[in-house]
Amino acid sequence: MPAETAGLEAERIAQGLRQRDLTLLNRLVDLYQGRLVRYLIHLLGRQEHVEDMVQETWLRVLERGRQYDCRWRFEAWLFTIARNLALDLLRKKQNSSLADPPETGAEAVPPSAAEPSPFEAAARSEDAARLASALTALEPIYREALLLRFQEEMSLQEIANIVRAPVSTVSSRIYRGLAVLKAQLETEENADGHSG
Amino acid sequence: MDTQDDQRAVRALREISFEIDPGLNTRVKAALFRRAGELAQAQARRRRMLTGLVIALLMTMSGSAAVWEAVVRIAGFSRIAPPVLAAGVVLFWALPSLCATLLLLTPRLLAGYHEEVLAL
Image 1 (cartoon, each protein chain N blue to C red):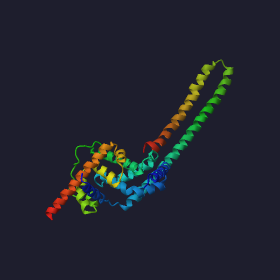
Image 2: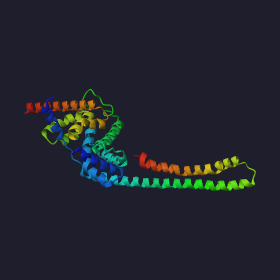
Image 3: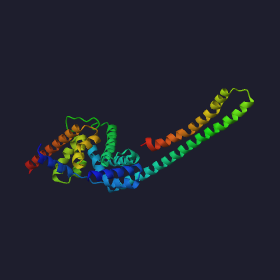
Image 4: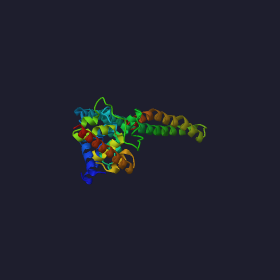
């Protein structure tokens, strides 16, 4: 989408949000729901609580619509709200990995073996399936950075605004996250090669 | 960093796509509709209270002016000094009226404000 069109769209969204226009909000829900769900699953690493959080995020969009600054893309603002809610939830669960992230390693709590992680269940190709377990084990901050960069196709600056971190930190998170995923792909491929 | 491997990892990442409960949008929209109604009600209540506050303040001011007129006339017949009279009117009429108005209306006004803005 060209920048000018995006700007106009953002302006229209801002105006509608100021007026608490429900037609516009319903349209936004249709347009962004999938991306919001995906973002929250990447942040939380599970599907539990995601529905509640999605609902809470949209209610905040309705209530705080006046705070939306149309210089930014709507999804960036939406994700910021969702992120704050997710952080609150994680803090309540005494898991501060997002609020106070360790910058030295990309490894995290291993996934429970009982059932497939949301990433494993959502893998749509062989490579994606290989990647899924690594994604589950990855720290949320790295998953988040990878998602925003490669699936949402946001600029480093936009990501930095959402995660409230310097661009260099964002960049390093993407680099590290990608390194972990690549290593996983290689390992799984080698394992498949040996077993096959 | 190997670009080909990077691209492969990114492609694999993009091939992870979640299925969304089809009822979720409907539930979210229903919640938005409910909350929008509540917010509109709170806003209307707040507007009514604000109007009430302005009217009450105007009535307090005009009432005080009328009382002042009456007191000045009465003072013409009595030997009370004008500053004492003025202090009396302010202390026993204007201030209590103002306090009563504010005490009655401000908490409701703030409650409406809280409901609409601060509870967000």
